[in-house]
Image 1 (tube, one colour):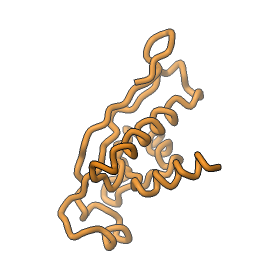
Image 2 (cartoon, rainbow, N blue to C red; image 1 turned 180 degrees about the vertical axis):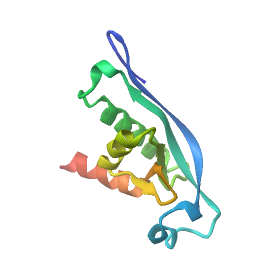
Image 3 (cartoon, rainbow, N blue to C red; image 1 turned 90 degrees about the vertical axis):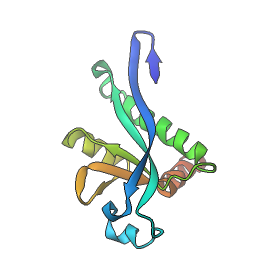
Length: 126
């Protein structure tokens, strides 16, 4: 949770989730183990205060969630990070951050943890 001097600036929750391998895009599905489902943390209910629109709080919250997920992937299996977009604007927000839509559910998106780790490494090393 992010807090500023005037109260809550934004929040999100993280929980473990399972993605049906059959729901993954065909190209990725071929590379996955032959399991029915794969582990994937879910970023739930990410939101920021309306008065902070344009302040990039949402991006900071996603970055914090991704950082926390990546910190535990050495101990806990997590193929991808999943989000559910509440509308097309939210979907566009996540897509701009590199999340991909599930073919059968365009408002459910995912970011492979390998992609997230590579992006974080690139951001740190410049």
